[in-house]
Image (cartoon, rainbow over all chains, first blue to last red; front, side, top):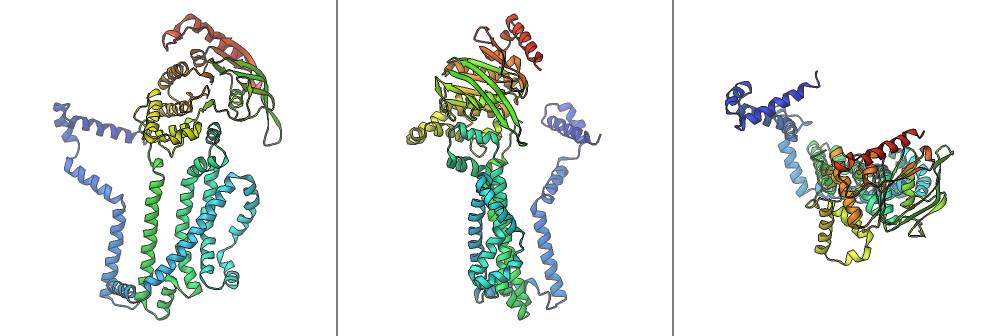
Length: 301
Length: 261
């Protein structure tokens, strides 16, 4: 019973649509009495669209910020400075202070680490999925390394590499490479037998098969791995700055904490949130472009 | 082109290490421009036989020859159409891109030197041939199952094959599309002077299309029957299927397939 009711509703809507199109002028009068008037129906559907979109979520963010501003002005405490003052500090730090330098330093580490992790993760993960020898040779090593928490490696890495860029980049690579590698592996394994035979019948050699069939098939998986890694990368890049205690936005926040500059602390935190959101948004646009074919579905089946 | 299968057999080693018979030795000669259907129960080795002819698998013993020349690997003159066409088309390429894939890999250097306009004209010509003119810019996922299989046919034709091997190609499409696709295949067979080996589990389909129907024994037992189909051409979905000759052959064939255990 429950399953059949939506279908009935749909049929009613469809028939009323036909009526309002003027095909049955006599029935139209009866129809108007039965359904709500079109204006309120349009408002209802606009409200539904709003509440089911991200605009609703952004409104909540805006309201939270307004509440923050209101509370901090009404009950001034050092722990919760007004947003306007945080914004002023942010601007001052960006123009006169170290905020942007620190940010670019963190982004540099992020970009380098992400690039290396992508190269290693995609190449090794994909080959592990396509070449039995590579899988046999690399799987135990990868699985062992994957189990080690990065924090356990920190003392050794500091001992070997010091606290410079190479230390930070290695940590970022270690954190970002595994999601990329595992997803690339899964993508490479997802090539169907039919697809492999198709490549054979068109006489593609090994390299052509990997480039023309393998990589495009694995691409959606690889992109999932890249997106997971992107989030991890920024977080780890910030943390490495704090650990090394010499540069980056993490260090900027640490410094602010040490001098109890709560406004600068918030300025740093908001910067990270905004940059992270922006990076993810850019990634989603690229992802959608690359896998446009996946969002199209048959109108007939 | 003619196909000669000389005592070709296939054995597999299962995951448990046991020897499994895919196909006991089969000897079969298929004439140039013949249309041969292969029928049999599931697991009788029809797909194995087809993959052997396609060079996708090597026979454990015996040999496969095309025009008298033993094959090693997939020959350029042979194209294969799969049952699960949606996994055979490249979903990230448009319909036109898929046809171009066929062209490109069949005539590597020749096609690359041609200009874009000539290439597009060739793609559109192939699409028109399978009744899909104007769909070059669409993606396979936007098309129905029957239309996707047409794209696969157009892509195979783009490679200018002499032999077409089809593995239950229409079993996943709806009955009405299937009838249209059968007639499309017969037209293409005539127009391109192809030799066709058509694997199906549908007796009616096998009879309607072919000059000759091979019945395989269950469990890879080899050839059970080899029946000529003297029905006149051109065949018609309604007229041919109601002739006494068709119905007699159908009963005979059905009886033999059902009698195999």
